[in-house]
Length: 204
Image (tube, rainbow, N blue to C red; front, side, top):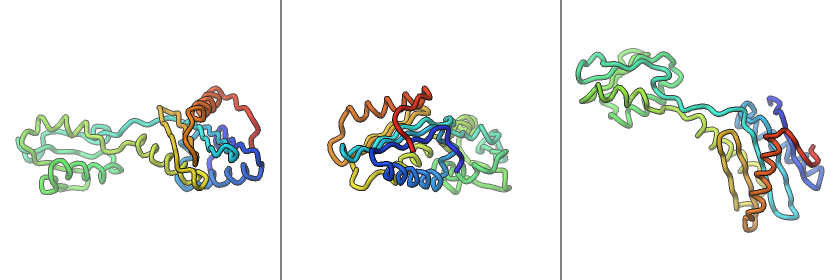
């Protein structure tokens, strides 16, 4: 796993902290999150039945639109069609799915590997629509993977959860009891420590 700038796990029981750090490392590796996470701190307090996590991500990515990897213009079908010339095939499958959903599979044709023709009534209007079509949202995908990771590492029975992703900052709190606002506020303070690079407490 790629080394994180900060990786702290705290618990009153040292062996428990070491175990959770190993579980967390495995989850980060399995979900290929090492490059996304810069700093992370986890606090486990079984005596209070609370699990807290704060993360600073390395950077956010903007949604990928058709215009980012293709040229869109009036195409082979003249007034009734738009032609898309692909410059990066990585996003082609997602683009085709989006086009099929919007225009119907019968109106989307691919005469060549890097050429897609869309039959539509007002191609001049549709050029901008297709150019601005979001085909991939890395931030949304990352959010889902982060939530997946936290669920994997949360102690069994801690089903009451709170999470927040704002820009590059992620917090997660779980408990088996009623969620307390003070726990959420504590986790926000953990996040502030990570952002400032000042980590308090004992880590493993």
